[in-house]
Image (tube, rainbow, N blue to C red):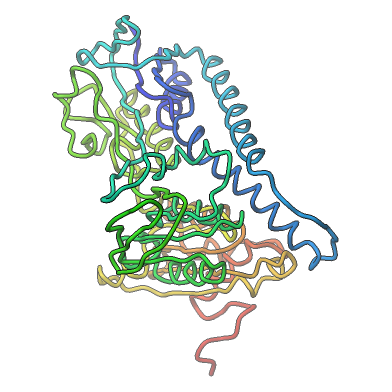
Length: 452
């Protein structure tokens, strides 16, 4: 008998398997597709690999302004795609070896829960004490009104298999997927349209972040339509709800994912309402069956999934209550400049009638930003008394900067903690220090507000 049977080997599943093995438990891990799940094979890693190629292309294209002469700059999209697949493959092989190193039994087949202690795969039954569902999610496939080819509307999975670039593309949704792919296509000289149902780009972000991204996109000639939907498609002509009509060679669905709900005969016993319902311990309505990662719908991010995995294993072994807190989960959107945030937005604080102080520090005030020619963006901090309530960053290295705030918030540290820290110069991290000082109008490198 296995101590734990885990269904799905994405970030939630493999992290749970490794942590359980580290704690001395006997683990069987089931994966019907590829080790590493969506993040490694069709999401985080491939897109970041492509974005890196885009950045190199853009940097070399602008090399002359830095005193570097380069001529006849071009890119090979097929090679860019080959590289992202190679990168994912190398990491997947390394991860597979790591899992084997921990002595975890891996079953590469679809798993079905026959009862609360039996998982079936490849016509074999595996007896387990606990079951962890970590089956992840898939892109939503939306059918639009009209007449168009089946391969006209693409998901984020489909786009990774393209070998030639379209001349134009319409992206539905401006969350992380939509924003990152808009940046990729725009960098590679594709005409980009964004169609967003909500009234602003990047709907979950702070308004000042959304406004700045809108400005950057306009500068990059990315057209976007908010509070808008697709009414009809005829061929490659797209009629929008705002009465406009655009033409695009393809549509990319950049919004919405659906969870796996078929886990075998026990599925009908599980409480599933668009997601697998769990309590604060990630336990389903069945005593020894748990759900972590995308399937429980709490936070559909790879790093959230891994943290849930770690905390769940400690709960199963020690009955230690998980302390997973959505307020301290950082969100990052990649590209140039990066976007990151954590905690409350200013709009949420106003809606919840929470008193707060606000600082706004422009990245252009940093010497390192000028040296690198990366002066676009800002660092915004929201605080109450001596605690940080939220942070919102648009900057080079924002994906790293946000974790300085995450450490403070996750450990309930005071603003004074950052006051007492010496930040190296010149760095982007100085912006965190300066933005904290700015809460009291004491930043060194920007003018005082209300001077005198």
